[in-house]
Length: 251
Image (cartoon, rainbow, N blue to C red):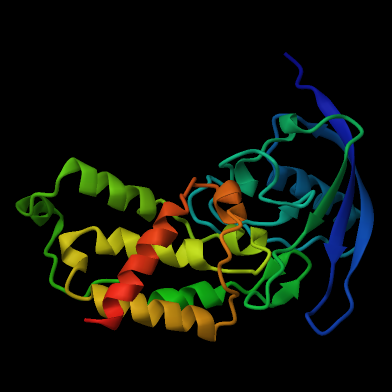
């Protein structure tokens, strides 16, 4: 069976450095298999640009399995594209139609300075994690995990928050470029588990302060973050973060 192919027009943001003026450039994407992922489509376009001795499009990628959180771009105004709970690397070209024009831009946030084209520096998220997104108690080895009983409800609550891959889509989607959904997922994940209780107060305070120091905006409950999160993280986690933060002020 022969795979269907489509022809597209790409309008891609090109910018050599953050201190240079950027622009949208137009490229044809011809004979694109609908079985390709979005990143594979960009690979094909880059191969064509390379053959023409033109600069290929710079974009982030790694595992291409929707796990690592490395990939990310705004596609037609939507972080990771229009498919719900889908990373850019798992967005397939069958969700587009022949003749479509696709506008591709980088994450736009003060805390995510642009490096080149679609690549931004998301190390601010690492700084937030380093401020408190961990436990320092001796948790033992893997066999010791069952020695501390945890109810199903608590385990599921922690797991749902832990699904966050730190891609930054919530920041890109938020009109205030807030990282509250990301921070709340990391805080809620550990706060729900007994291993995370000893440092819960310090963690919430430290991570929120670091978030502010990195230049992320404030949350105004617009809920775009929840709508665009590729892992379906709920804004309920933000409520839990607020509760942990308020508790930390009186700890």
